[in-house]
Amino acid sequence: MNAASHGSDRPCFTNFALQEYALGRLNGDVRLEVEAHVGECRQCAACAALIEKETRLLNAALRAGAEEGEGEAPEREMLAMYLDDSLDQETREKCESLLASSSEALAALLSMRRELVSVLNVEALPGEMPSRPEGRILRMPKRRILPKTIAELYGDESEAAEA
Amino acid sequence: MHENPSEVASLLARLREGDDVAKAEFIAAYDDLVRRSVARKLHAATSNWETSNDVEDICHDVYVRLFKNECEVFGTIREPGSINAWLMTVSQNHVYSYLRKRQVRHTARESMARERVEPYEEGPEKRAQDRERLALLRERIERLEAKDRLILQLYYVHDLKYAEIAETLSLNINTVASRLKRAKAKLRDSVIEDPE
Image 1 (cartoon, rainbow over the protein chains, first blue to last red):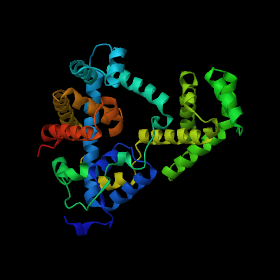
Image 2: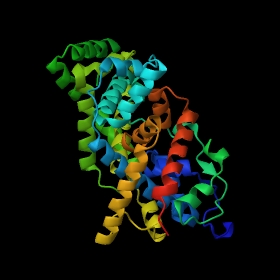
Image 3: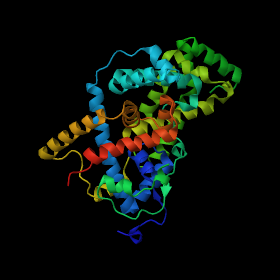
Image 4: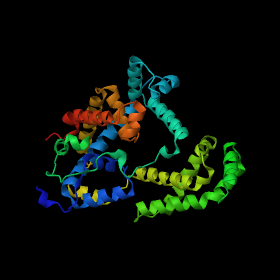
């Protein structure tokens, strides 16, 4: 597959952009741009399909793990200090192990974080979607290959474009 | 709709005190604004969709959010005169949140289907293979560093953005990106890739 097979003259979207798209996080304008481009560009359509597949697998595996996860009851004080970045390294690592293995602890941490955000800044309410997510690069030069595997997919995008 | 900032300030104060009459007054005064904001944003984002039920659902979510925890969110309004803009922003954010849950993907879905990447759910044999692969994937996830597992969970399950993950875990945003990439590479090499 070569660049001449592209139906669109515009630059392609990066894997990051396609990933955000697969997660349903792009706002109206950008989402429509991605959809229009993916509808015309076989390379990006193949990449988007692989990214969606990877996302679905990871989501299913992580959710299944979280449902089975057992952990200690979360200690609010430790979680608050974790959010405040005021734990020593050893306790911090212990806390991260607890959070990674206990869905209850992670839910408690996220709930505390939401409370914090809601009192600090209303603009950061859940659901906010910037038009250009986090300033990361959304466009890249034309893709040269039509990836068949996830390894080929990530081989197509340079480190520089991801960073 | 209240035009006078002092009237708005008084209404907000009553809401914070848990005054149910104030809630009814608030809805009567601002329901039209909330509905128009939601409908406009929803229509712009999903021009081909039936949206009347969606508008109802989203408006309901907006009010649940506003009246949650004794209306604490109203305490963040510093300028009562700017309540209209504030309400429009909150309403529109709920539209994005709603759409994100619905995972709207039309055109691209069709195009992606043309590429014939096998769907995850397909036939008993395929399902058995997928179950096995999922079990392997979970095993491999368990072997990752706790911080990397946390990043994966926050990104893929809890729907946090890179910046939010960075803030939650007290990391640099580029560290989040590189750790996510590295963790996925470890999983991809052995489990995610199709054995061919």
